[in-house]
Image (cartoon, rainbow over all chains, first blue to last red; front, side, top):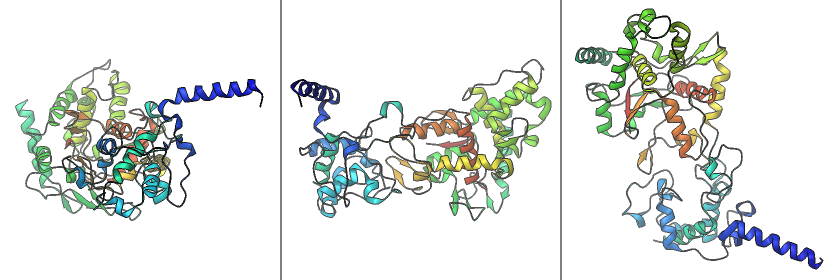
Length: 155
Length: 278
């Protein structure tokens, strides 16, 4: 590769990094490959923050995990859902790699019929509202925060 | 107005005493649940429950008392509109249809209905507007306008207690099938179909809400969240937005097909209009 080409490539890469912002270093939703119901490495390359994760877990605008899952750790929050299994002690039942696979794309783990959305997927052709088009429900960083929080749920 | 109110209350009392297809229509001293067995063996559900069943005792009580039920404000407006002449022909609904208690006793349970001239089904809102534009020479009312909601609620209220009975065969079949497909198609960023929640998880809580079977027999419905009466298509839109999907338009062919299919899923449930929901 000539010097000119290398410089061009550098420029292109820095443009991509600029456009993608903080998530540039992260694995993009389209690049994620779940094998045998596991996703071993962090999407961002760094561990998440469990305190932030608890926030996304209960936030109606973000993860809203509480909409479907009960969680005694957040007993102070009203209205825990009953759709999915309660998440008390979930880290005793699943490894971090399994939890990450479930949060990223539950369909790859539980099958296509599951009601649980995949939180780090981009869906095409199903009337996604304009503001959410091309975007996963959570960012890579938020997914890692949620994983870090789930990992604290031991009994 | 007091007289009108009394008349409606009396009609309701009559409806309360009726036993339709083996169950009593629940009103103050009736049974404590609105529930029937699925009419057909092809039905995806065994037991059909009105949305009433899933609400709090307070909300249920609000629906059951016609004097407290806020939906009757619209029904009352409908009483007046029924008699009001409008348009170039100088006609009111009553000019052609007479006493709504008789002429509309079945209509509210049987919509959408096939319209031969249009070559498609029409629902109650669309039929009312067809009457306005074609018989009365009047301007159609806007969807979700106070007038259209009132007339829809008033007409459907005349069929209160009658079991929902929509035609789904013959020319209605492709519409029914389209509705069924829409019902089972996942949409939006949250990747959910109507069936994901309302077939597989009814009765369970999703945060502060308790999922119902998504039955339509109480529409137009007074929703506490809306603080007003609203159409079924408005409710469809709300559901779609919640799963972060671009909603279809009120009155669209898609929502009409979905309405037909959803009504069929409630075949046999009594019309409850105006229901009260959360």
